[in-house]
Length: 159
Length: 131
Image 1 (cartoon, one colour):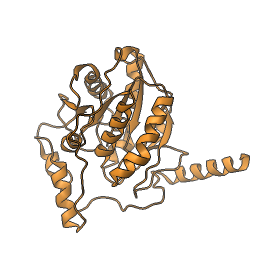
Image 2 (cartoon, chains in turn red, cyan):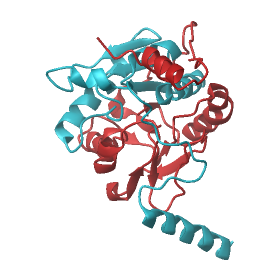
Image 3 (cartoon, one colour):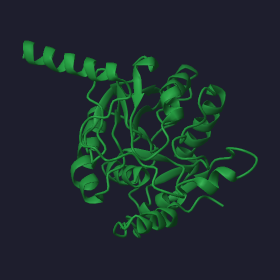
């Protein structure tokens, strides 16, 4: 059985005397755009929420940070850092590929499984309590960046 | 909330004609927000695309997940990936249980290394100087 995170987080917040968190429940059919050609011919984008930044960039903060960072896909992996309040960072700080699969994706392009990668990946700190702010502030910005990158498909990676 | 945020972004991008696939290790949160396509990896949070320093496993995980772009034919489908974190399920017992283990929610940048703070400052002042 998978972990029941919604129930556990509800219990945790109750114990801390926080209000009940209103999770987003979408009862509609999600939008749907099938991949127009094989992945081996596609340009793939990457968007990750695990608080990944590149040394030299201003790091994320933990109070509803809706900022978005642009990380070149050819970044040296040794320049990547992780900062986030809601998950155990130990492994991500050792090997960012556990939440930001940059070497993995570059390898798959090398072996021809993916056509190519967008010029840049986009990262944010996903622990944003306000789903309204995610919808209204972050989503349009991310989509605009992905359109500018002219990607066919995008892999989204939460942490 | 990471999983919820990602699902909302994927729905937004898919609506303008970009195919999306969300990794997830929190199946219930992902199913609630209901993104177009998802691949479920039953690992502890913070390992959505694999275990550290195991590139062969990381590659297998992504190959299986990315196959979802062609396998998944129904909007809102979630593909369960065939990988286990460990033989026993003890990691699940402690996941998000117990006292609050979160870091305080400061509104100042939280650097991994102090050196990163210095580099970010140096870069900001260089930009201002050449401005």
